[in-house]
Image (tube, rainbow, N blue to C red; front, side):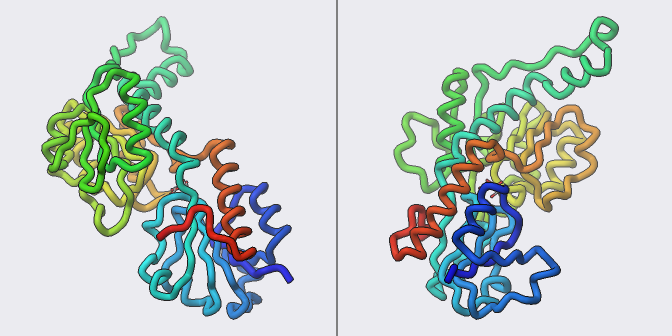
Length: 309
Ligand code: 8YV
């Protein structure tokens, strides 16, 4: 008999078909079948980084053994509950690191070089008729990284190739290979051109990038966020951009996805992407493989490949 698994939200087709080959899959998001789930039989829940799994969801399945997360972020997972009840948790770290760091670089370059405006200028037929304002250089700029985990380090490595001066804030980082450490986020923000948010989301980092930090980053500074919208006070960000107290922003994540503050839509100094940092074919396939391999390991009595402790 196939183990019974609940899926919190849809996954890519290739993962879905392999999942359905090995498991009896119940879709929590399908109103037609949701009522027929025998909660006593569910042994695993599969979710993603954005949807996570809160206590009210996990509590519905008394025999739950495993939570598989298609993503690295665990801020939407009730880890206190999983630890307390002995539910194993596996996520998909490492395989997405490079793509997330690539997007951070893309956003910095797009912001500095005015890429979105330049593209629109050509498409609108303005080339040869109007002047396009000069952009700004990225090479050699000061980049401050908030959160020197896997993604933060990958961003630092890429910035080094652009001859940037790199600093970071991360009280837990050891082995920082010559990067400049700041103990205080405000102080770092005041000394960099780009503040890149790569810290994990969650209660400890909620809105730590607030009006004071944005003011320190200042009218020549840009905020880049590829981690979680919850880390930034979004209203303070909108206000700072509107008033020119902050120069620009490149944002992949938002406080209340998929809702984006509408004020940002008309700002040429802002580049927006819809939480797509890991959304490449290669990375999403690798994330799917890791998720499936973790499930297979669990149900064959082997250790998880990427357990969350
Ligand atoms: C994914 C993410 O977009 O890994 C994470 O924590 O937020 C992203 O990689 C997400 O898990 C898929 O919805």
